[in-house]
View 1 (cartoon, rainbow, N blue to C red):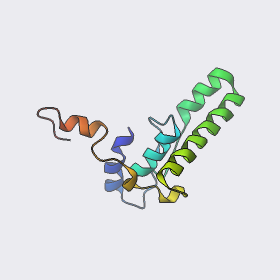
View 2: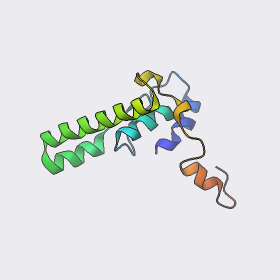
View 3: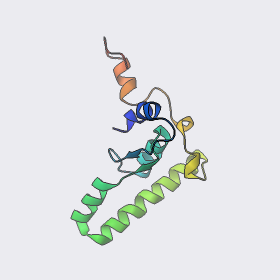
Amino acid sequence: MVYALPRIRRELGRDAEIFADTGIRTGGDVFRALALGANAVGLWRPIQWAAAAGGEDDITKMIERITDELAHTMNSAGVSRIADIDESFLVKGQGPSAFLSGVHGIAA
């Protein structure tokens, strides 16, 4: 799960190469994974879906769609380089840890 990335990054340090391949379906997911500490993302499940739906042409379309979505997300955030995506673009208090912190007796 991409929300585990900050803890993994802290444990492994800045020099570790971290690849996220869970929960990546959109360009926004790619942006979020990079901001949470991944160096790269995999698109295995979307590729499988596209291959099953229409083969090579649909795989190409899916990759183009995710690339366009990432470009749009970066543009909206005012980012011109992937290397500039970091945790400063994340909204604090969202995701599973925010939910868990509100559940009685569970510390996030």
